[in-house]
Length: 305
Image (cartoon, rainbow, N blue to C red; front, top):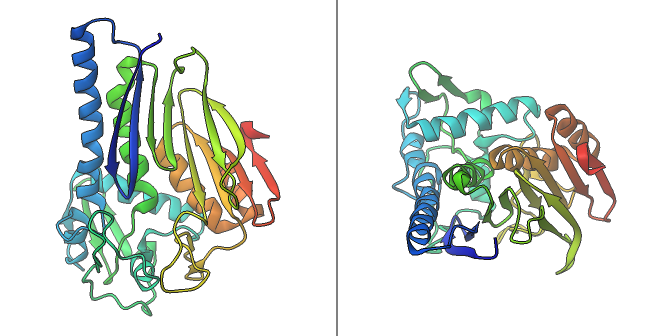
């Protein structure tokens, strides 16, 4: 397995990269491989169209305008919201997808592609107290009801979901990698027939602080260095929803889990919870975690100990 097919594309405010090891022995196999990779990449745009709060034409923005009304949504959006609410409940509200309006007030309101301000247009006021409990799901009818004017932010769920769906598309190849910024999934082995190596960024320097070796697993990192507020000094995009402020007790959290949606959301939730509660939370969820504080204290749980 010496040949590696690589496809890169812009998506969700980052660069996505899909790699497939092998399957290039002849023109027929290469054509099939390229077509499958193209289908995998297309899922990112489909999920962004569904789950983005920055796109006025997205399904999520349409839902935002239908306060108090049960709205039938696509299975993809329903699953993203359902999972986000489940993580909110299990984290005691430290993670909460209803922080969208507050995120807008911190300046996280620009369309990744155009750079234009993309206000939700919601009647929600940033001073109005909302929480995940203000979102009601009907699992039989697949409806979502917003009980108050609010803005859902699925940033910690949607990209991971896209990685997982892309990985499912590539699964027949066995040995592949899906990389969407800090959200990754690795199937099988790399071109050297070894577990994939994943470098974890140093939260305070342009270097790596640790390297992990994984196979058939997702790895997602949440860091306070990823996106800083353009309007509020010292604020970043990972919020403790209980306080409405950027979480500050950690600098980065990496989670290794069976799927990227799980790893991404749990890394964000653990970051919001802080070192002690975050470690306990990840242990209860049965995943492996690597946590660094701003002073570079290192904490681990699961197989990373």
